[in-house]
Image (cartoon, rainbow, N blue to C red):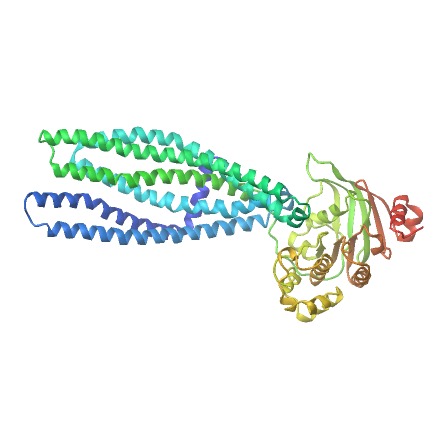
Length: 573
């Protein structure tokens, strides 16, 4: 990504706050102006002392400059920090908005820990570069120019000596800046990688415990932390070198000015008070020069953070289409010679898949693992786009459906039936927040969750823990099914809906599915054939294609693979 594009993106974050930034910057300039007056007032104090005159006026002026500068600078600093927090808030909202609208295919190849790092760490870096790094650098530049002007009015020779030293050291600092940016980018990537590794362990926390793999995972995360530390040390090294160069510039300039200025005082061409004031102005160069160097470092950090943020913002997002309410009539599904693979370098998953699901009733997809059953659901939900053939929902090509309208017509229960942290009520209403208490109660009863609600200490308001850890696998599955039913779908997709249910609850759920199939279209993926023996039609998939379609009875007699699956589950002799 080109540097000017990144800088433009940085400035885009500033524009909404430019007025308050201007006020904060103006206060900073006033504080700087008060600071610039202090060496000159100190000169007047020294002159008054030498002439045995009254020192009250110069001392009062010096005191006023100190107080005004402190108060105004504090106000400007507060505005900068407040604006910085606003910038971070805007950046995080914008980035989260983008992340949650990305295509599933893009999110699948990204690492959750790294995404979290971009939302937290990288956006925080923007605050430093867009407040201290930009606005305070402007204030420091003003103070630097003002100090140079005041020094020029006192002695041009000493000013030339000072500028010569500063320019030479400044050139060295300019050479260091690109290295700081590269090191900062690598450091932020290392932190993101560490977050991804830690997230992996936390997502499989019980598996880690059960496998006795704590030490191994601690070592893996520790290695990632060491890499992040090493990258951070590179940033610290280059930043320290830039800081030392700045400090050396001022110190060498001080020695040179002291030597040349002392000679000029001895020759009578320069007053002692002017040399003292000049040396004070020279030390007044330390904060603005340091701030400019720090601003340059922060700018490199901000550019690195902006590049990582832009990587996410430049990913294509799904079309923003609001759900459209329409007739609740069930819809059919048609796959016609569909081909699909998850990537150009990945094997074909669907190779000419064709089948038809009429509106209403229960249709099941069965077959061995890897046959492409779950991919059918991913294509229907348009998490991925098929590469060949056509898919129609309700007689309408799936690509002609506005995405929001399509997904509003679907109810989807994933294989692992995810439950989110929050209360049981929040999970049930996650996909449909406008249902009545009567409709909620009916869905709870249909999915046999009423016993669970009665048993929980706070009923529907009970928190279910991270990923629903306080619920059993079967309870999480029934919560997911109830959530989908409350959406009032025209097509209900159930991926292994009974995989975690006992025999009694499986039988009850089969009854629920039969009831729902009388009202809408139900498409089920099942490994346990007992769930779908009463299906209106069963589609048998194998090797990325459809090998047979029929009822349980007909397939047992006509299809060898289905008969084998049924026999292994003791459904036939």
